Image (cartoon, rainbow, N blue to C red; front, side, top):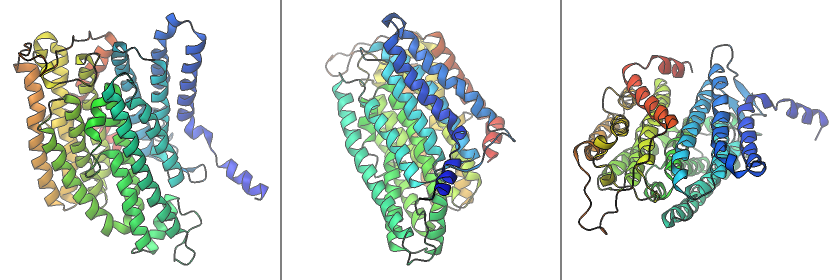
Length: 506
């Protein structure tokens, strides 16, 4: 290759734009180095190092969203695209990492497992999620996505002394490999179609989203491209747990450590929807194909997630199936975004509301769970309001928000999505969503009822129901975290101004 061309390629590698990801990688390496050089008695400070490293990055990312500071455009020769949306999601994933690390301090304290490696992998996965939000090329998307997936393979089975954790890791590995294969096959078909010199609009870089969109616009009914699009959407549907690719969710959510379940439920799902929003824009010329598929998928996801959750007694399985239903609500926003621009902001607001409410619930779950992390029953929450009123209050606020009860943040998130769906003319989907929302109230409030209106009594048949574990004391950092999450859930329900304006700046 011409040296001048190589110099031009190198000049476009703007390393400053991915400084947060580089810094996270350095902090992850520092954690491993400190574990080697520091005496064992100082290893308890390493989670604080991980937390400080992530917290130090968040202010600069928030400042970068202010007018005049935001960097926009392609970098690394089109592999990455800087935009307001990608910057918002970088903050989202950093906040998620902070909350996962805090939950890790509770859950890992009950296990005889290495702690440092857990935080190391969380930081690496967070950096990959941030790169995923900026992807503008299928190569970058696939590499970042597989980095995230491989990290989750390890995290899901992190409690290796638990058979259910190992089972969850194996199932996630098999189904994750299957979804990656389907996604990659779809990418290959799109590459072959868009790189065909005999087709109008062929491109020299068919894996770049912008150039691929131009090819698809010039060939709106190409069979090979259509098959590739269906396979790519199917691969992404695995990641977000949408019907009919949700079969792994209950078992993996139950077996994974509680902080990892939270990371999967919030971080991984959000990354999947960021990809989906990008792909819907890229595949806009094939809306005749993508919108019917997504519409059927959304309706089935909403109904399956809520109906299947009605019979669950293990709260981790319940929260997993409720996460399937939330994937359905988010799919509504993606469908509406194809024709209604405000739906993009609605999806991002929903994701933030979901993050806040979910981590409030997972924070309570981490304190109620015993050493056997997979064994978390609704019956274990009986009498929680009497013994730990603070935890019960946080649980009620979080579950109420997930159910969409006004005036909490979750209600406003669903309302914004419903407005987008109504304006896009998908009235049938809106009816399905309202029915699904009503169904969800039953299983969310059965959990709240156990915490507030039931009293724990030892079961007559000890083998039928597992004994209730001792409640974990709430430390000051966790008290502050849960208090802030509950307060933000209430505040965003009444007043969406700052976050709404921030998201609308796109």
